[in-house]
Image (cartoon, rainbow, N blue to C red; front, side, top):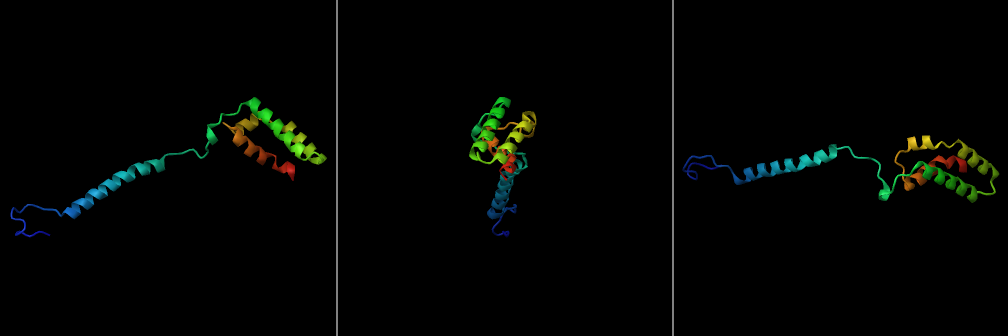
Length: 122
């Protein structure tokens, strides 16, 4: 790029654009490294809504009974649904429920109970 007339000391002169490009590329590589680390880290798929407290066994039992009684109240005339709801409540195992849904919050509980009791309404 430079000839001997422009470079009387015969030293190697690099273009300012090439050194800037190398420096910019190096900075970009350094910035990509933390991004890669963030992508590689395992993140939890589940998010606790509003940091609500985890429900205890007694809380779950109380909430299940309230939920079933609410279903029965909404469909008070349907005797078949009331029988299904009572039968479901008798079979409900709180230990198994807690094992399947560890660290459950109140918000999670309502979503899970809707899924669990959806077949009662059909």
